[in-house]
Amino acid sequence: MPELPEVEVTRLSFAGRIAGARIEAVSMGKPLRWPLGCSPQQLVGLQVLAVRRRGKYLLVDLSDGLLLIHLGMSGSVSFGSGLSSPGRHDHFDMVTSLGTLRLNDPRRFGAVVYAGDERDAVAHKLLGRLGVEPLSDAFDAALFHQALKLRQTPIKQVLLGGEAVVGVGNIYASEALFLAGIRPTTKASRISKPRAALLHRAIRQVLTQAVTKGGSTLRDFSNAQGEAGHFQLDAMVYDRAGMPCKVCGRPIKSIRQGQRSTFYCASCQKP
Image (cartoon, rainbow, N blue to C red; front, side, top):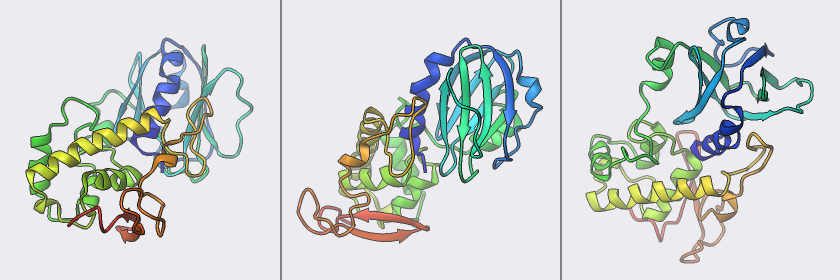
């Protein structure tokens, strides 16, 4: 699944190129996870002002309203002037004066949703419960520790939940917990203030590194220019079950938490 770094890398790869474009046509393929929320014709003539990100959502600001784009489990966005005709997995094409924005999603868990603004009921339903952005100044170590003290579930699950901090998906939660030396099964409420500060710093470090590396391409992720990510080549624990830890040499372990695979080093990460 594309996580925060992949979504941010996608945004960076086309935001500057589409800004100022005027929408000339919109076409829809097979239904996605949620309906568009307006007639495609309603978007024609609007101008693209900017592209932002909130958690794992791309927010395309328009001269009247905004589009919320979610990549789902396997979606990707492309943007350019020479795209081929839509294929069977292309579900949203927005033709603009500067190129075509396309959402491709083989599994159709992604979505493109129109909202009047971020206060709109539809937007609030999707964005309203999201936690603080981990790469923003608002991500404060002390407040993060306070949020953890309120939660009795394992820290890995808290990170994936998106309420204490948004966008730390499965890959990066495993990596940040390794960097902080915290066992993923440790209850969030048991993490001390110094260890929470280590995790706070590790989250920012891992996500920043992932964005710099273009995200992670485990199967088919690519940015809006078709470029793959390379963070997975630097992973310390993720998808390395049975392989030696790069720090201590002991085998990396794998367990299931909430239907997701978790990877950790039992020697380097303490309960």
